[in-house]
Length: 473
Picture 1 (tube, rainbow, N blue to C red):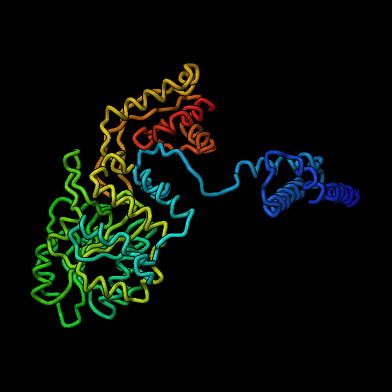
Picture 2 (cartoon, one colour):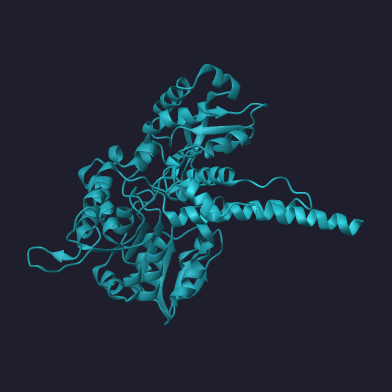
């Protein structure tokens, strides 16, 4: 008897599996669905197969007495829901309500309207990327930003690669392959993604020579480390952390004097480089690129998509002869930037030269916006939410702190205003999940038992969509 029972159950399972609709039957039903009209057939077919596989796994996991399998209509609706949620494209806009201005996971710096316009112009037509129009001969793609960088930084020459890590790698490989590079132990940084200075040093073929201690390094430490195999003195700005207390560090000018006396080039990796002094807006002193160049450092590298407020890029400025060695290195070919990076970077640098950077570059505008303006935006957001929704979600405007992000100014808290959500019946965690499922997704930050929607990083144009997303919760 038990054996017969198992057989009957097995037969029921097999019957249920056989009754599942075919891929073709579901595809025929989906042809009339307007929600996915125009979706590539290959993608739709893959989604159908995946959904059918899920249904088979459900039936197999149900044991000997599975429930009725889904029909073509049921599976088709699941496919439509899956494809609609995913959308046609994976990369898309989000509303950044985290309060982190340079959020690495959300694309860091927003581009200025001028940079956006220049990207569209270059994307829609052929351009003079590497063509000298006057002579009809091949030109240099770097010439479009070389003059701007020379005037803005005071450096003799420049080179731009795809990010600052690449810039450091290119300098080390070009100037110090097989040679010693002297770095203070307190500057052996690790940035996001477990990327470490010692690792890039090994990849470049250079030999790391650590000097000093974590908290204190003196000029004599550099002097004693110099030998016949020394190829470079590297100073790394600790842009993503701070060593405080009983500390000592050697200034750029002191290293320049030492390097010149011994015939050794000095490089400073600024990481998140800035072209303007932000101290008038309440920021602590952050060395600007022109300041470091003026100190006599031979090469300075920095990022394009952090405090500069432009596209992802690694910018190296400094001595013309050293820049030429970088440009001639075959590795530079693998790291070179394309026309879109050049277009956006040229527009970003143009704003600095025109004196409009603080007003037109979103990163600088968000960082320097007065608290009063952020409060007005937060209150305006609250007013757009129906009163009954406000009560249900415990919505209220609160004071909080934003962060710069992107490995810049790590100890600085920026005063801000945020919309706080969360009650005992509507916990912040569930509200966070609901907003991330919105279109466009909304990213806030959880603090204790509240979800904060920080209005420092919410663009004015995003307020209606954000209010709708909150109201829909």
